[in-house]
Length: 293
Ligand code: AFP
Image 1 (cartoon, rainbow, N blue to C red):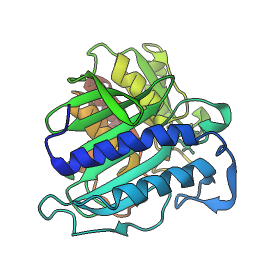
Image 2: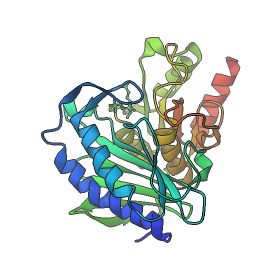
Image 3: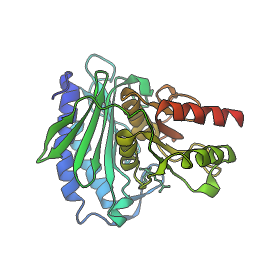
Image 4: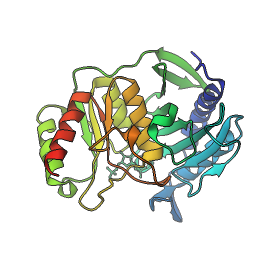
């Protein structure tokens, strides 16, 4: 099933083709790169840099892509007409989400958002977003304004397995990042409620954990921490794309107060608390955090 917008389809097809190579290219690139950090000050693996170079080269040369930005690069790459003009988009990418899982050989992902505005952009200017999950099988989930669909990837091609992905109504799984001693008291109280109701599924790579929520229903979050009031995850590369996907699948997103898609951006690498999942669980979260104000 192709995406109706030809530029978006070209981006999706390029990510599909590249995902097969990224997965194969992880072998031999599990080492950290000495003295290299990403713009968020995090250690980079050789695979981070390689996946980013692969995607930057291919996505920035697509007609209709005006900007490319990545978690691994400080600056936005200007590569065409200004996004927002007709059929010109900005693509924001987390080339290898959860790359620290390379060390333990656990699931990782690639995330991309396609914005109809110049970066940094609000999440509600997204026209499409997707993620690739490097699990036992390589799968991809794509959301557009029309639908959310899931594919199996192999040999550079994608095979449709579900053309109307919706969040299950009855939540089953939860996963919260950070460490309990670093959680705020109000979030900890909420987390204690959730852990008495749902099953813990937390693997250290957002995409693996979000895919559990997309499959079984529940909530994934990386909250504001005492030591990091804006949390860990990046709005442009993680929060907005995943928030858009989950909202398009019938769920909800939040930074603790509002939909992630309405958060005003100030910087390409700004961090934000991130919560996605069933709307009832997020309504309870926002109510709990509001009590603390
Ligand atoms: P890495 O890319 O450094 O592995 O971080 C992954 C991530 O950005 C996101 O994918 C996870 O949800 C979160 O960080 C895990 O963070 P913790 O290691 O603090 O649990």
